Image (cartoon, rainbow, N blue to C red):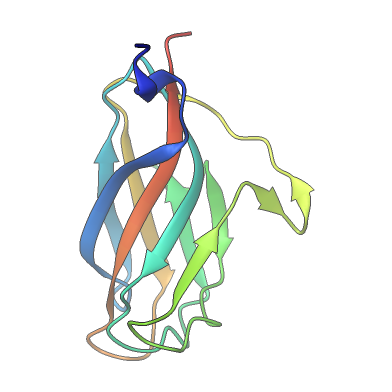
Length: 133
């Protein structure tokens, strides 16, 4: 049977209790396959409303960690632990171009403007697929 890591879209990482109140970067995942392609991110199990959390970057470039998505607005996620939000591979309904990440790349969430609630944490899951080229 073929190795499903290279033929299926799957959850490739989950980070529990990511601080979405305090500005700063949190490492979510270090890539393990020859190339990792992130297709979407799920934010779930929020401990409080994400009102005020209107600028979160995702990516691997050390300057701002925004080479996957820049300035994601999460303020609509106000429901608490039973709700979740999906950040997908589109921007304003149009396909977005993303890069593949080579093995050993650290992928981050970088809170620029955090939630007003303190503390406010969430589980962040990364979904995607792997390739060898």
